[in-house]
Length: 257
Ligand code: ZN
Ligand code: FE
Image 1: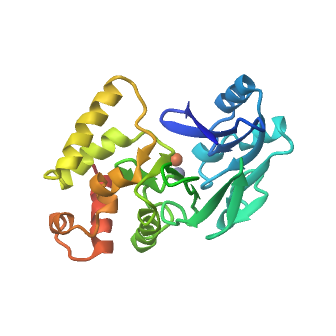
Image 2: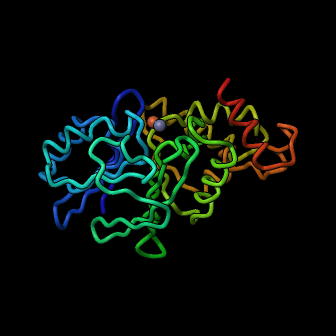
């Protein structure tokens, strides 16, 4: 399974999963159809699946047009998103499995950004290889999604599920927000040496117009304040001893940043 990253809208990423042996493709969160159609045309591949993480327009905007072009395509999304994802045919919940290119993806229910949000996790094929996590707007490189329909408790539960995956998991999140996220992170976790060096690295990367996605879960655990709500250092920054309260206060600060 090859993963191809496409740019869309102002700062979205769309991921095309490509099965080279069968010449079929799947797409995660098609914000718009045009870049996907262009890539599929280049590959001469048939689109067989749309994996949506949640119902927001910048994640499902391309569904209808892609379905017109590929009438056989299956449209996947969370069960709680019934009625909100254009063309949805498969209604997924925690623990369900999806298949593409001889890989099995596990569905993780991660409410918080929206009440129906799911992530897709493809475990590694061998111990040396990374796993692949498509997490939409739940976990970002250096940050996390805003709470539109969920509570801090729900979001912490969701992030805990993602934090439990192996460190060598590639994080394919849906937006290029990394630099701004790390600017904020430095204001709350400024003594973190790993964070400082990541900030410099990402700054250089963005100056050169390069993407910072995918990132690695191990890096996120060391540098992303929204996975570090149990760290005494961050808890003392927001004057709390409680993980959920720490998360909620950090999220509130980020909303105003
Ligand atoms: Zn969203
Ligand atoms: Fe989004």
